[in-house]
Length: 243
Image (cartoon, rainbow, N blue to C red):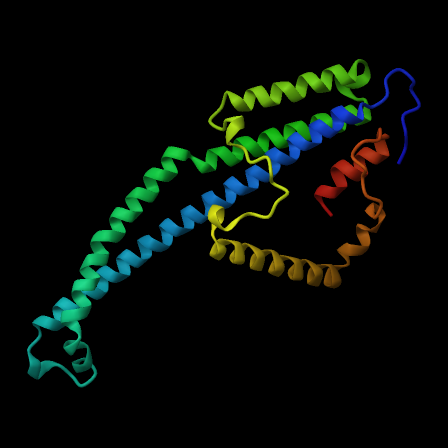
């Protein structure tokens, strides 16, 4: 990785470490909020479909119950004997499920998870952009870059505190695996399964189209602290978004 030979101001490793930590906290909390928002949205969709299906079944059972015995075929007779047990259960579900959907919808509106993850993702990307500009010494970072990055990091944090996402609500221990009381074991298993499928699909895609070979030039990882040349900036900042 190329080093900047200018003796004016060396990169402040402690400042960069703090800025990277803030970026990672924002990024991982954005992913967490997005997962919750998507799960809640999909749950509402599934429950709505279930309510419609149960309504159709309940109407069919009511119609079957009113049908004369002589006109019922041999396939419908087994259902007729269990209607007095099944239909009350369906009717209770048709009362409980709409109430549940309304409560979940009110929860989604109250906490606005979708807006939260957008704010956090935007803050994470702004901070990441400032870090790379600092390391490349471009824009206002040509002089007094340590002071400028410290100010920009503080500005991003204060802007986030003034929004719907308060700093105290962020999870500082994102390196730890999500516990069962946060997302639930079912969501955790689904998330891991999706990641595994995505990883397998990516490996298959790389083998079919050779994208893995194109990314071999990025085999040397970015240490996140050294100064960058223009070529390094293109490699670690831009090319990673494509490969």
